[in-house]
Image (cartoon, each protein chain N blue to C red):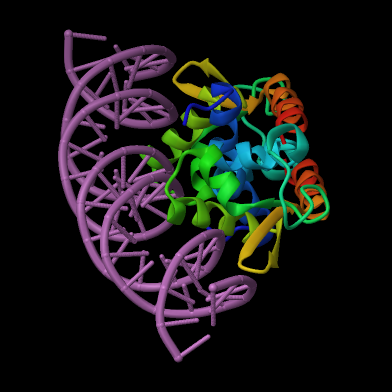
Length: 105
Length: 105
DNA sequence: TGCATAGATCGCAAAAATGCAATATTCAAA
DNA sequence: TTTGAATATTGCATTTTTGCGATCTATGCA
């Protein structure tokens, strides 16, 4: 079957995984869950992938793929600073998910 | 990783599939999507599994499993009448899903 | 009781998701 | 330019999901 909305489908598949939901939840209040960073503001820029990786307790490639799934679903915004990538929530994408859900479900 | 909420996890996995979302959407207004039934009122009792099966275009065992996933997630209510099983939405479960989402996401 | 219908379950194959190690890429600093 | 750190990508194994045919179970009717 063809998904009526490819975006909503990607978003729902993205949040169907507990680790990825955990990341989204942590990033609701980065200061409450992560130590301050030298480069990149926790809130404005997001949290360094390395921090997320160690908190998740998964290998680096696995974490990287989880983050990519969330970015591709429009739920996270990546920001490259120097050799780091910082991730913050994409509130617009999350709002779209909520809207799509209430319409489709 | 352990899912913080096993129920929410089951619900999100359940709606991560387009066919299952389609069923939930059809059942929002059964009269708009299904012909009247002899036994079992479309709205009060739900829609016969056979009708859902033919509308989905999937084999009987496959449809049966999809419906079971939705029932186990508390999103559908099954009702056995004679040799048929009718399915309707579990609005309480769907409300719980919405609540869980807004809390966790 | 015997038979037909609807649905549930079993067993298996194909596809997708998830994990990791190894490797490639990117960027900064020496 | 070489080195090191952080991230991205590749390749592969394991698990989960999804599909089907075959079969079992439950129910109703002759």
